[in-house]
Image 1 (cartoon, one colour):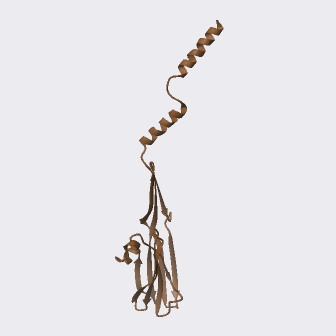
Image 2 (cartoon, rainbow, N blue to C red):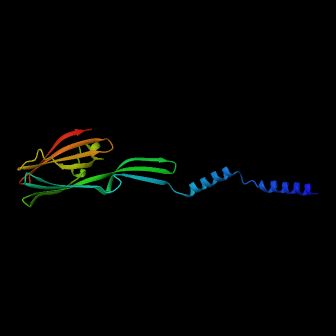
Image 3 (cartoon, one colour):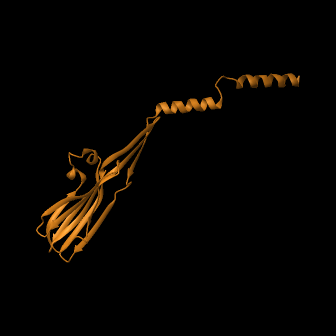
Length: 186
């Protein structure tokens, strides 16, 4: 009698465990597919540089000129570097646009106060460079500067093509400006 009760109990357990719900693996796959249907794309956005970046330099040239230059990343302007989509995951990379504020004074009197960015230098004859260009850096070329003029180096780069342009901006004691393209690499 005990054997028959045991046998009936064993058959009942086997019968109730086979309820056609599928294996644990099938249930997991079904749950994952339902989750993916309910959720929108995952978007990963990366910026270079990641955070606000600023470099400020103050120089005195030949006890004549006081030059203040602030190079900084514009947080509201960027260049699209790449965009990849795989399934419901998107990966987007941006390069921030840079700008520079320049203030040149002579005997405490300002002779030049300006902002420089790639938009101001855009040249219609080279749109492939300028469409994705950003200011890289502005600096005082102390070796070329004198008591009569300040010589600034200005570099622009296209982070997509790795091309660059190097300019020279000469500012005289009267505030006159002369801009020359020194080097270009495409």
